[in-house]
Length: 324
Image (tube, rainbow, N blue to C red; front, top):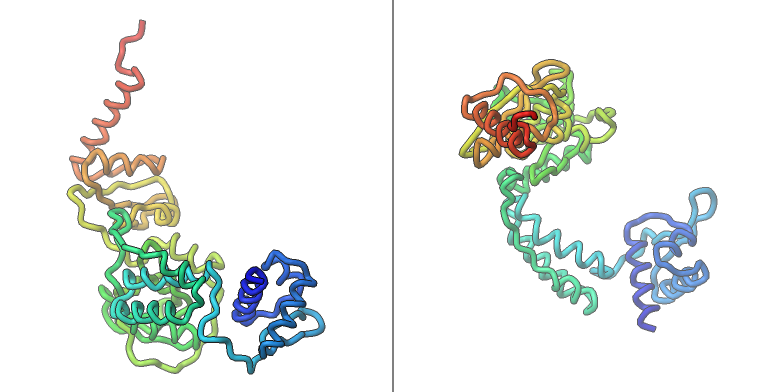
């Protein structure tokens, strides 16, 4: 009986996403037979839930539009995901810590005992990753304003730190990468796509001016952000910081550059990478990980460190021994 109730609860949570699914698809998700799924659907109907049967191509079952779910219907995996999300979101959004804590407490009270047990088992503490260099937590109101413009396909007017004048943009997507928020937008005045740090954006009153969505480069906002070298990142403060020209395209280096580094376009096949580390040999080692020719190395301390590494590697390989 307990297994039946848990399966029916999971079926209700699947319907809660609003999709229309066939009996076969539901059976696969539940790990049950089609006959069992249909019996569980009848159980939900007996309990007062309007489960519609949609006929024809693309048909299946869905939750009726007039049906209202209970306050919270989570299976164990959803309970864990919600608990983790609400505890970690304050690290990337400011002004939301108290609201997230209250939301988590409310969810705990509304969850069935079994789901609550799984949710309360996760207490998350955030620690700084010294290679990630996240942006400072962003005001949730900024995310709400930009996200609303994206959803409604309205132009936004923003001030962007480091650039003169106000920009009018077509906002397409928000991307979070390495604890940094980026806006993927098309700039009609410059006739180009941009990846922009949201912590440098100050949006103004909504324009309510619609725009038509365009095809994002690479067909994926995440890929676009990761391969865009001029996405607004800044070089982080390190005890040692240097740069060099790498014989790789800027788009390639931008994707794999460590946090707190910057990439500048040089030619179609070369770029300048500026980065830092705790020591000059450590910085030299980071440059070597790109497995590319390097030139125009600055400063002198970094060149010296590369020479030292070559000497050490030569000794390790026995290259300094005289041939017999």
